Image (cartoon, rainbow, N blue to C red; front, side, top):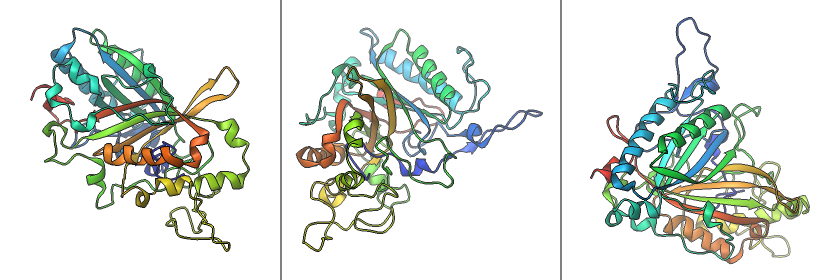
Length: 397
């Protein structure tokens, strides 16, 4: 695929495996953990972890609603507990309240990311501080959303390179919320495991396509501007933060597999084998949207996914996609209930996600093979300093 608001894109940096972290030391006399298990990601910093962190192999996305009497005080206490818990688990320190299912493993690139939904500000009496950018997403004609699996007051993204580490983290977050917030929905995802390929390479989605080729890189000069709220942005408590759009997108895999290989490539505008554009070159070659066939027809069809989602087709709209595949078994009709847990990050969702999704809504060949079934938008504040908890600038400002 390509950079896309339909969610058929992951994070290319994550496909390479590893993490922008450090190895945790073993106790004297103990055998060293493998690189996979010992990798740590810092919890404290300007930005929250789990945004530019390379994509892990396991994820849990979970939303909570505050109980009726939680209020601002209860929310602040919960975010303090969650932040303390996250910092400890990400550093490889066990949760004493847990069952110890991950005691034999290291932190395995564990990350927690916390965000606030639209309703959080009503539940805490902080509506005057709700960001304008957090207004509900517009309805799209292709949506078939299940409200019970959408939105939420609080959102937590958990990622790790070991399934037991990720599950223990999920259980710990749930326990810490007891009495203050109840689970609204939970979705589990996966990605290719680090080291599974002969060399670092972009991963594939469940349609078999190389996925994440055109994702922006932290090395890009305008990356911060596109992804994070600036230090002088509004509201002030969102400085260093970002806005996450979450979409559960079911892929109609039986229909997709019924197409020929050539038909699939024309839907996307890229070769399946290596992700290169149909206009030639390699995976990272620029897409030549002006190229034509001898008969004058465009090499990249007018409704090809790569053309519809290209930044030049959307006023330069750019977002960072960091998505996971999911598999929830089979539906009653026997079709697979599988697809993409799409997560994208941007400084302004109206200018980024909404702009591109509206374009897709008007005519994207891929739309015939996907169904958007759940959705959410969350304000993810900047990272916590060593003596702070996530969201403290909002809740105690």
